Image 1 (cartoon, rainbow, N blue to C red):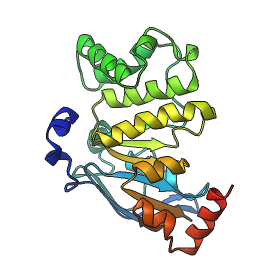
Image 2: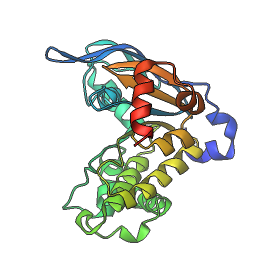
Image 3: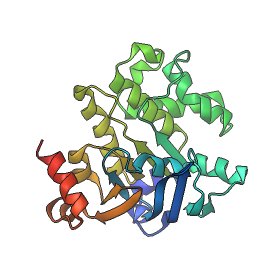
Length: 260
């Protein structure tokens, strides 16, 4: 599905189809159990924000969806494809799932345009002309088309993160994963990245975001998931989550975060 049709025809993005299904996912690092039976279903067009204290398993969980971490037990199914040891499945899922990291992970020796066109040319096998056209479309979309010929080191952190988002979108993924995309940014640059993410959410993208940005979580998410100790302890609509938390650990977390 491409997004152009979804914007024209809103029925396509009505969250009916399950894009990600996680059932009882466990993941160990040696003796340490980082994920302890995580189950989550995400439908097309859902915007899910995952909150939780440091070390709660949030980043590990979304990295497992993209097979950047390997779960040892349970099921992860992306767009109908089970995540297994089959390398073809992993490659297919990575084409469907785009990831934006805390550190921008741009190649310093390539221009902004080259950073964005690298994967479409090598993985999607697009012509350079088509890849550059789509790269420019997304650079325009995130508000920095004039930065195309520059190198990452010439850009601010907020601009680099917007390049990283454009690079992810240029692959036309089904699902966008954001792993604390604003935590490495100076405060005045956070808003420009959150604005782009908010726009993508409104356009019907399926998004899972690990973030500490409470305003974004409250204003944009369809559902907020609270993780701690490698488990999902609560998930609810933003209003219920913030105004009527049920789990004691969540109440403590919110009191610490919202009153500082």
